[in-house]
Image (cartoon, rainbow, N blue to C red; front, side):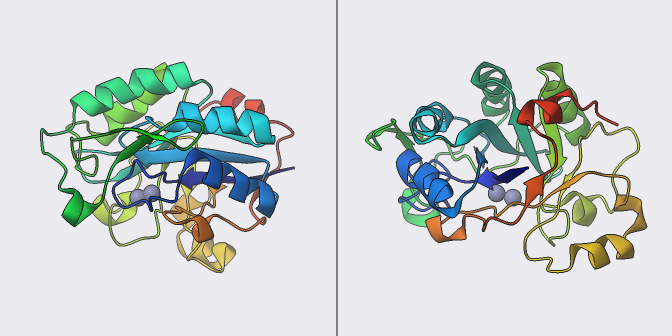
Length: 234
Ligand SMILES: [Zn+2]
Ligand SMILES: [Zn+2]
């Protein structure tokens, strides 16, 4: 059993707290007893390498991830087996972001950090904009590098595929869905949306603050994360 939280924002996300440093995130996960986490900033993987290094020291598996905003303003959680695969997608995602400068006084700072939590740079382009990539194309892009695709927080009213499209398109290649932690009774929720029954679902914190990082309750039954990557998309 792997206790996980695969949706955590670092200080690179403008809305992420500046205390969401590589060491703080990984150590918090370790204290809680999580086996695996993913760092999933908005439209960037810039702090993943640093968090992975800390994860190796601390003994928490850190997956490369990214929460991509599509042209339809849908948030999609993407996870990768390697940082190289993640960076390949991130390069295209970054290029598909509009050229809008971040205004830290309004949106918050976008800090790049190293494995010692030093601020090594600041991203100037605003990362919380929709990209020009449509959801189907994003899924194809992520699958082309062997990544995993999960429409994020499908139960929410904003940035959710179910809100913005009303349904999950048949031809969309996904590995599952993310149901947010705010849904207390997940069984009842799925019961109310029979179209969701076919999907594997993840329950993550979508943490922007250290105290948001998920309790040790959600787990994947697979005996290794590799199994998740072997799972073929529907
Ligand atoms: Zn989101
Ligand atoms: Zn998020």
